[in-house]
Image (cartoon, rainbow over all chains, first blue to last red; front, side):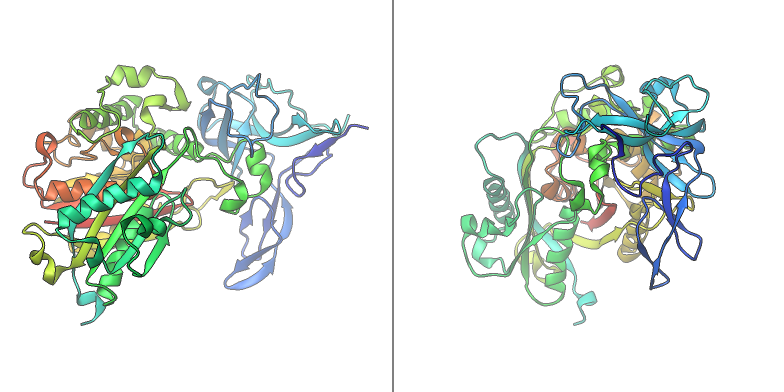
Length: 155
Length: 384
């Protein structure tokens, strides 16, 4: 049975009705993303606590990617039908700024400071027919939600 | 003498012009640059006692001794990303300061394929998924950094276009530049966005070429030239936690300044000069936005002041602080291992008064800054 599979383990909670990015928190309160097992804190190696990052934040900056990125490492099978996309940093309050693909491809429709929300979206289909899922951020006002965004579990 | 008491001079520089040279290897271009630098210095290859060779694409650039002569000298490869040229120069100078050599050579050479740099994310310590989803591109950073900077400090696209137009104008006046066709600000603004808000003509391209410098103990420099150029400072800093750098999946909320800011302060302190003393500057212009940001990060103006300075043509040759007088990366392209020594080549020629149509009058102090992955900045200060 084809499934929806996250592009990497420990990146976001999935399947979930309310998926969230997974960060790692150390005893000094600092959060890192992506999650990793250890971090040096004050010279001592410490195991990090897994935490869910806020699902909403504000767009801190953004840019566009006009050409298909060099492949490998880029893994989407869109050589024939590549469409420019946007990326940005979304500031998640109290946590950090996370770099992400954005669901709105038109830079004219993006604005620094606007509210953004996490989406888990299909990215490509692997050899077994599984949908590989990635995280992205969508403008909250809904004007820019055209990348088949879903926040539901496997269908 | 303590190493810090030993002063270092540059007595010769050479360049294999940057561009595209099918059929020529990076090492052969390096050979040309070294031969030109040796001739400029008035020394023969066997006089070189230590070699530092920088390259991104050539794993063993120190193999250049096969072309120049295998004299048995210590020959080492150097790589610190786009800051490689600053590092090879600094290491050659340090070998002189430590008494390892009286005469040293720094060379950079590279030959990149066309298009954006591509590699596996693991070479930068990043997870596989970061490349799979299309985030592993250094150019994203340049678009995102200037977009935020324009938002925070009121810089307009027109100012970016002015910086790019200047680069191509200076390139047109430089017989050894790669791109020698002037472009209007309108042409630059109307070219397609590569990474919003940066358009095609606001970006440099990876290409091919080489540059070299011959260094010696300052107290013997006048044996070789009546116009030695002195190395006043060379500094390199890596990124700090919270700094906004290339290829970073997340940023801490408590922001830190770019490594350029620290390298610049340390270099001014080491040189005993300030930004007001600099007559000609070479700033890393991977894109027009980087040049604008680097003007402030290197102390030449306050954040946001660039808008006014470029409108007043302050960074043109003849302006208050000429920037990238040879056309910079925008007009020369970037063979990564060689780019920093191309800056040194231009500064040495400016300080020696050899730049013809693009000569900065009475240039005495030159400043060069490099910035690149994974968040490394180098600053070199030279004086006549």
